[in-house]
Image (cartoon, rainbow, N blue to C red; front, side, top):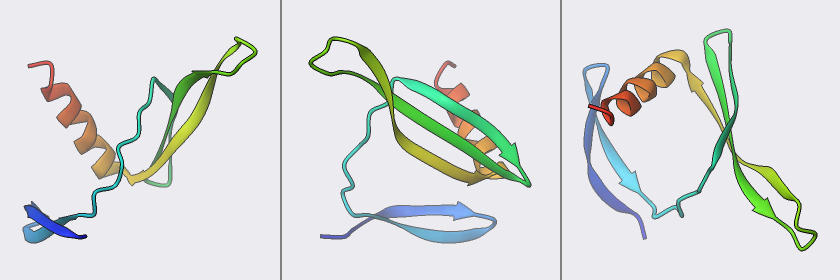
Length: 82
């Protein structure tokens, strides 16, 4: 079931936000931060441990963002500390 959760202004245009209830992902580590041609690559991993008892970091999410969206994400994260 799709539900409308609000609106956001982006580049002066109002966009309707839809939320399909996607399950949240959990990450312990940032494993990649790189930029090329204005696209920022971010990868995240979760620490797991199989029956052998050896901890490992499994990549569970990769994001590709335009640089301005990545910088906006960084500013939003920094605002959490204020």
